[in-house]
Length: 156
Image 1 (cartoon, rainbow, N blue to C red):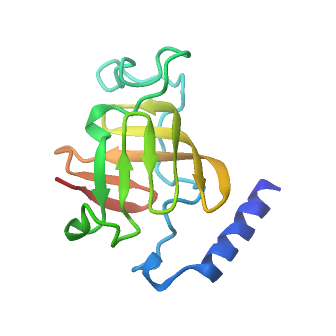
Image 2: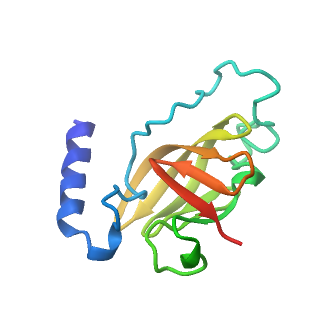
């Protein structure tokens, strides 16, 4: 049933989307996603050398979930659009929030490795609320972020 509702929501969004919402025909990042990039699940075994320091993630159940520092900041598919709302690919990542073009929300869980994490967040936008999980992979130099089939550059 949830898949049927997701398909219906995607069809409605596709019918209502503006010309600027998708320059190359990609699905907007703000929708609930099924990510193609695998990431470790909570409790999955990862070697100590590549696991996220739980000081930055969700070690204490009472503490708010936090996205590790290297992933934080503003990201955009087009560097020239950084700092503006001209491009729907704009993504702002804070310690405990993520903000897309038309949705934002509180981070509820974070897990993964130093360069690939999965973030679960409770998102709100356009009158709807949903839980979203997405993988984020940071380049070795920390200047590009891949998520949901889209690569973004770090904004200064």
